[in-house]
Length: 205
Image (cartoon, rainbow, N blue to C red; front, side, top):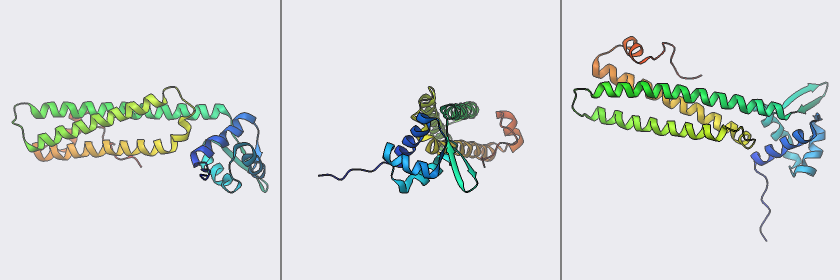
């Protein structure tokens, strides 16, 4: 007979949120440690870790009063959190589209009246990579469009992925600028002005 598989962290987080959404009540840690194992199958030893992960992700509110910690969450807060996440992704997507358009214009100009070179082939390959990244962002937006409650489980991971994607876009822009400076002897200010790159453009902290 196979051994019963335990709950994953994301399953525990989802079930923990159900306790607060279903009861719409405020609980002390000791109360949750009693309720969660009985009603949701969450082991007592993992209750504190699950609660802290939800607080860290701003899904759950916590306040210390005297010697006791209190926790609460309401469905409206989760909905607002998902809406903010959706708006952030839309903004990142729009910024990506603008950068891609600038790069496409640059590639078009670089091709005019010139023979194919290894550098141009590399640039075309880079453009294809950017297009695939754009498709990935579109797919992410599609997942979030209806603010599906299931999205809450993946928010932490998706936030890291989105930040990495922005960093890759930034890498691409700097790489193209560096290539253009060597190829056409252009300085930063002329390149930024020609392709609409803001002076403060840089990596995210």
